[in-house]
Length: 150
Image: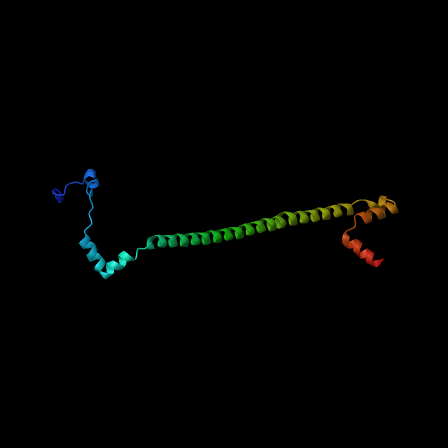
């Protein structure tokens, strides 16, 4: 079963030189122009083109520019908000993760140092050295309580 060729042979294949030379001479028929001018619908279309195309395109360009400006402004605002959140997260993260952890580690080490000092054989020291040693290693809570008693 061979496919039937339905191409009409009298049209032929278009040639580029034929297409380029198809309209060498364009003439204007005054009677046709008078008929077109007499028709009210075509008269409106022909008469309404006093720069409408360019003003319409200018209006479209203006609208596109304003919409682009609004979109870019909102994107910039959202980027600023995201950057602010990022900076706040870094600052609070630094504070909670590093600073508070370091302070807790220092307090833990100070507690161990106090425990080590409490185990020292202080009975071999004389009285003034023993008092100086106790005052030096006393915690701030113990010092505050004794000042209130005095």
